[in-house]
Amino acid sequence: MKRLMSILCLGGMMSILPATAQEFKLGPEGYFQNQGVNVMGFDDIYPEGHQGGVSLIMHGHRVATNGDIRLEPTPGQWQPVPKQRKRDLDPVANTITARLSFPDSSRHLTGFNPMIYPDLAFNYTVTIKGEGGSVVVTVDLDRPIPQEFIGKVGFNLELFPGALFGKPWIMDTQTGIFPQQANGPTRYEPANHSHTGNFNPEGKASAEMLAGKGYSPIVADDIVSEPYAVGKRFTVRPDDPYSRYTIETKGSDLKLYDGRMNHNNGWFVVRSEVPAGKTKEAIRWVITPNVVKDWIYTPVVQTTQLGYHPNQPKVAVIELDKRDTRLQQPKLYKITPDGEKEVLAAAGQKWGQFLRYNYLKFDFSSIKEEGLYQVHYGDAVSSIFRIAKDVYDRGAWQPVLEYFLPVQMCHMRVNEKYRVWHDFCHMDDARMAPVNFNHIDGYAQGPSTLTKYNPGDVVPGLNIGGWHDAGDFDLGWNRRPEKPIFWPSPMKPSMWTTTLPPSTSTAGSRRSINRRETGYAATGRKRRPDRYRRLPCLGTPIQRYYL
Image 1 (spheres, rainbow, N blue to C red):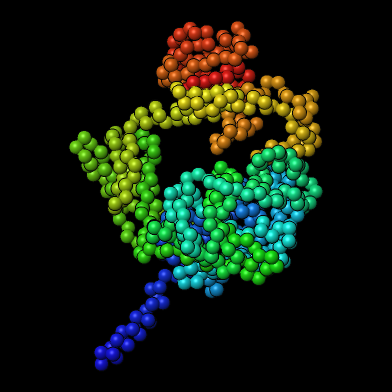
Image 2 (spheres, rainbow, N blue to C red):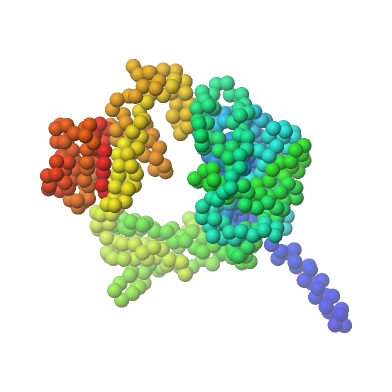
């Protein structure tokens, strides 16, 4: 009888296992979900910005992305990318299928950021299929890869480095720690640049000028780091159940590269090369993320960082896991010398769903008393903020003009007390570009210079002033002011000082500068601080600023 009961119990357990097993299912949103883990397939198309291909989001954090065929072990933002032609969803088969091809002739030696495509053309299909607690990624090609490109074509998956520094990995029996900086040794490989294709006769970019001499981020595949490890089964973050996932290859080896060896903004890369002569299932990976049972995204309560004027509308936005059905009541607390004091509790208004989240709104516009406040939603809290009439008077928009814009000023040395933000820069620029020329970052020249200056001539008066790109030290032509910029600012008299290079120390320029600066002028004479300051603009000879 006991044996019969055991068999009955076991049969009952087996009957309910499929209903409770953790499986990746393709949902109506177009991506796979398994509780708190999502796998997306070719939903975003921006591989230059580390977005696209196969992406893995685990328990609220994007940990890997850009799973796709690439032509380098560690490509950067200027390397060739495929053209995505079609994306199909099949909920019955539980698959996402993307059809892509190389080259994208519309980007070959042309466009905002022209790319150099090698003389290689093929079509391929990437199929992502949910199988239980794993997703299987398969790549099929329409033709074998030519011999000269064997080792150059492979399936890459990029791992976000900021979450991995100092964290462990395991490749078969090998172990390691993701390093803070890229480490050698490196090796030389023949560059794809030596096999430039002819896919766009109208392209005006020069492959030779883009490649340059010495290191060039446009090429960046001739010297690569040796892989940290090679094997068949790779586990990321074995120490953390919220970030642990395993990649297993059913074909060519997995190789762990460090993309920062070639690019400052590179990521770690796991890669399998397409084998010679292989087309069907040229790549087959099984990706198995660890799924923490019953995990729910912690709500995020967002209020303005600046604060609110008493008379303005005041609405907090609460971001929730779309699976979270435990709606709670938002509350507003005032922060007093004696601690927190509840001043308002009201039901949150449902706003709806956006991407992977639901949103609530909490309106507390009725609260006008000045002071410090914080919004609570269950255990989640917002940042502490102010309600006050003077929230815009200081430290609001002013720091952009007092710090950010001065730090980004070009053609000068910028100091903040004893910190050097950057030295004199772009002092050799303002040369007229060649005609019929397409360069990176949108720099392009038509059939004429439209001026008396010839290609290569230095145009006087242009290598002065301007602001850098917000993300690097690039100086865009559209970031040059044509008129002075004024702003009210209660700066200290000693905050700004300037020095002039000898070549611009004329009486007229000194008088102009003395009217613009505060603190000690170039003549050494102490000036009364005015409320209005002027940033140097096009034509201003100031070349050194102290913040």
